[in-house]
Image (cartoon, rainbow, N blue to C red; front, side):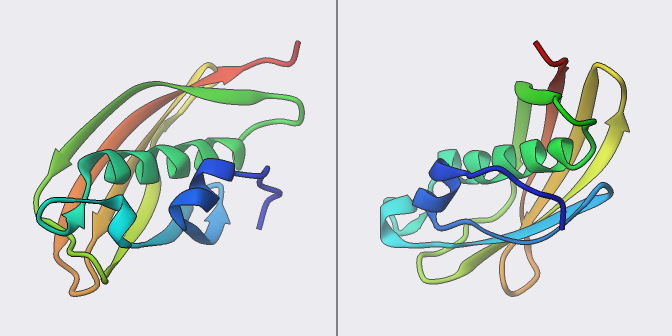
Length: 129
């Protein structure tokens, strides 16, 4: 697995990265009460933060040494709720890997396989300073 920098917010959320390659990142997020809205389902902002982290990790896995990244656009479609106590599963794959931007799609599913959300995001590639 490529060297991934410390991810304090992801750690706070409880996000666990399962695998990283230039072509795919997989991860899981236990749906704990402090990530939920009412009723006890995963908050949309938590879904978006989950995917945003994975898009950044995927971009880093494709960068030359010294380069970095930042999100410049993100769109989320929600399809099904993920209840507290379950685990959100994610797979991030590239739609575009260019010199100045990369676009990633993250599919988030429930443990029963039902699609919960699709997030498409654009990462800006930042040259070393």
